[in-house]
Image (cartoon, rainbow, N blue to C red; front, side, top):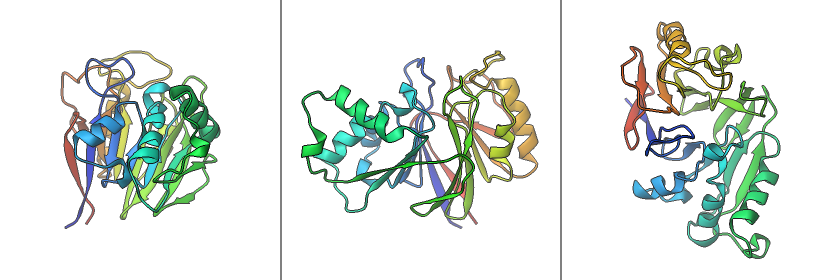
Length: 248
């Protein structure tokens, strides 16, 4: 029986309590969101950022995208590989990344440097199935304060993954997780709380109850505080822990 690894590089929401910001590494090469702590955590776990094939950016808030200048600097100065790293996200991702790099490293003209690893940006249109490396990806718009925020549904080595990114309660969540083998869900509020841009324990409990009978494995992340109670059918991600997902 083969398996896919799910390494939690960070499980915290924007207001962290000391945990690293939310970022998940799948199969050692697919990264879900890129906060400033992501490259630090990769190195902490002995992983060269050059190992990344695909990086998904759910939306352009700092705790999901401000790791870009650090990853790009790695590729310019240290981490080498012939194949390009594919940075996937909503429209405007490339321009945002370039502006952020210039702001982060003034005086460092990336256009005059030859990176040790190239980066290619893939800006997805919603609900259009797209091939990204060896993944089949569909971006589903999520409800997050009116931003261009995506949840991603993709196949990896025969398993179907659904990742919400940040979202409030919306019907698109059910579309995203339908028949998924693994659902990685934001749980910003581990206690009941009304928040139009995020999920709380009450909504996630209902979601878990709906998908558990189908055999979907649920992981909760992006938590403002560690969950104080368990939720049957869900795993609350913990920083630095690797989980195994059977694929056969």
